[in-house]
Length: 364
Ligand code: FES
Ligand code: FE
Image (tube, rainbow, N blue to C red):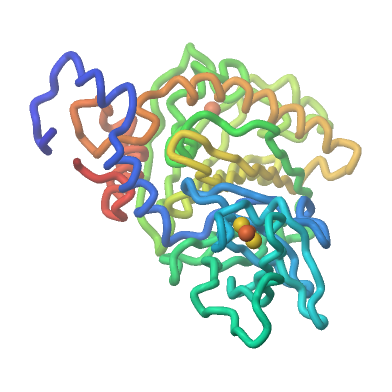
């Protein structure tokens, strides 16, 4: 397919159903030089190795001498999974030991112990597995598969601010979509009256707001005014007369930390409510979502469960729609596959254009 091809009524079937091997490879390559969240810090206990998958690559995570390390989950000897092994202590140094023949690796991936090595022989330098950049932030472990990340981990100031209460949501199951579609679906506001009727919008007023969209450093920023039904994400429901309001005026400012994190900031008279989503692209069609929700009103801890339930309900409304979208990956901007509508879809078009510039969506 070529750019500027005429729009046809029927997109090519194969492209709609599944991406080609080339499109998948473009997606993986394009996404490599970014930080991706892979696991909650709390889910990596001492002396435990956890396997995660990022961009189709299996990674063994472990705390070695107190530091989180990320190794390719594939032993250099006969390719067993290191994550099935255990952490051993060799002269005070923690190593990840393969379960098959006991080869053991340090945090830099170098093999430092081969039990079968004949006396007098040295461990060959090629006995090494890939190790990856890893760090922790916002309660999560983040990995970058490239030598140098293109951007820093996006900011989430409310997480660090004591004047906010934050609840988190961990989904048990992966979502059957790409992480870029997850971000696009969270940035999309014109679906509110349809998918979240009575919660984030009403169908008697489906007209799109006036979007202001711009780039700011590593962020795509979207701002608009909206009116939504009163609920805990727009209103302090404990305030007098809160529930009796018909609509609540608010301003949305959305920050997409390109290409895989989004922070929706909702400002209303109640205060600020923030939806934060960091996506882990396990594969081109499987995504793990890490959510957090911050508020600076209705601050009692025993109110947290109401916010957790509200968020889980909204999420359950979105999931089947997102999982139904094909192709799994976002197609190149202005391809024949989709029909974005200006100006309503401008934020999505801008996100898509930037993805294309980053090489995450490429013409094949
Ligand atoms: Fe890992 Fe043999 S496969 S030690
Ligand atoms: Fe939604």
